[in-house]
Image (tube, helix red, strand yellow):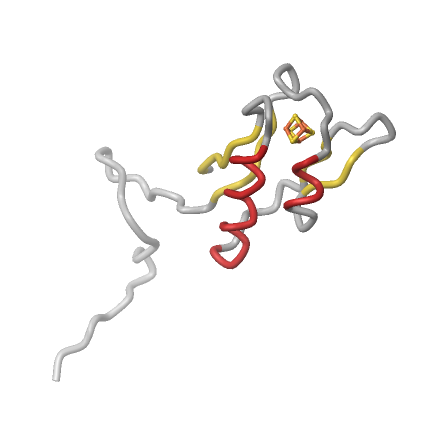
Length: 88
Ligand code: SF4
């Protein structure tokens, strides 16, 4: 029986140029748009904490699929649309 063999070069989807496309997503904040409401910290404490003035400090680790819904909820609730998930 033939199976799928993963080679050392089997690292996921490819870009048009043949490069490996990363599927990692990280939460990012636009510091200009952010008004420091702090809702994001309440909805996504796994990746957001607040500084002394109430502005978010984003943990730059990738957002796992398990946490993605939490991130999406925080993004949707941000009143200034300052949050987004970025692929890197
Ligand atoms: S919810 Fe939006 S506006 Fe409020 S602190 Fe977070 S990023 Fe800034």
